Image (cartoon, rainbow, N blue to C red):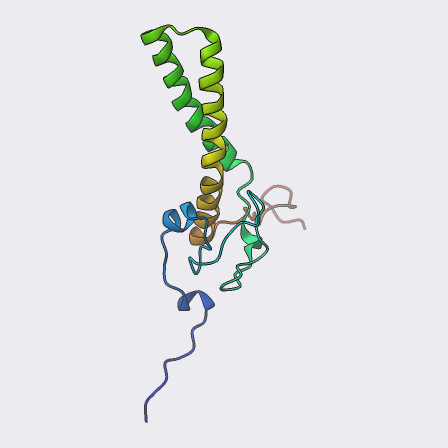
Length: 143
């Protein structure tokens, strides 16, 4: 008679460990890697249609926007400075080239960066900080 393995104490054990970077950049579910994260451009689904993972844990806040604007802003500014020093183009050329490059760069990278941060939250089990001392005054007990 074959013995069956003991039941797992967590549903997470049945899913393979996936790379948060790979699943994030593909905008896929952090648990199964198949279901889409988004419903539309940046609206997060309530749950994965493939494995049923509830996306209620996901709260990247302003992190994706900050990282994208900083990274794209630095890259486009360096390109702007290089163009200005090397070619001295008129300002209108900067406006029709550099400004759209900044907007397109931000829009193109915002979605995968948001998905990557959500996937990292799932893998690292990140959550809001919980402090046990909140609501107590000082370190001593009242008598």
